[in-house]
Length: 163
Image 1 (cartoon, helix red, strand yellow):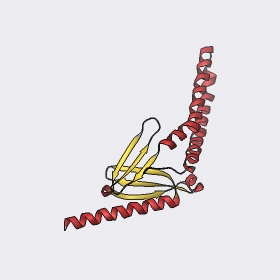
Image 2 (cartoon, rainbow, N blue to C red):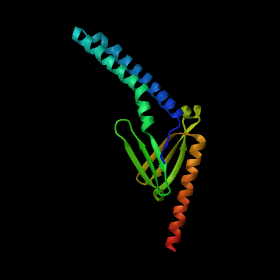
Image 3 (spheres, helix red, strand yellow):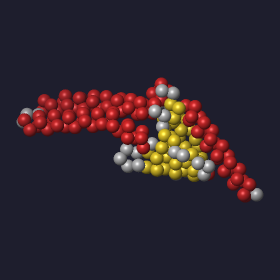
Image 4 (tube, rainbow, N blue to C red):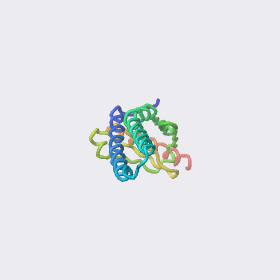
C-alpha cells in the first residue's frame, strides 16, 4: 500500500517556496531598478508591468498551488522486492528501485526540516538515487531499518543460492 507524506511536509514545501520567492522578488527588484529608468515609451511601461504581474502570479502559484499538487501526488511504497516513489507537478515520475540493487541508504535533514522534525531518506544505486522526502524522523529511521532488513534478506538468499 502506498504511503503519503507527513502533512508537515506541505508546510515545509510552502516555506521553501516562500524563501525561493523572496530571493526571486529581490532579483526582479534589482533588475527593475536598473531597467525602469531606461523605459521611455508607454508601450515599454505597459510591457514592464505585464511582466511584473506575470512574475507575481507565478510566485503566488509557487507558494499556494504547486506545493499542494506535489504533496497530493507524492507517494512511496516499500515492498519486499522493490521500492517505488511517485512524484511530480505536471509530469508524474515513477522511480522503481530493486532492493538487491541498493548500494547505500542515507538520512538527511536541513534546518527547516529539523524545525518540523522531518527527514529525507535517500536511496543510492549504481544508476542514481531516489529521495523519499518529508518523513517524520522516527518514520525515516524505521524506513531505513526496513530497507536494511530487506537488503540483508536479499543478500542472504543470494549467498544461499550461490552455495
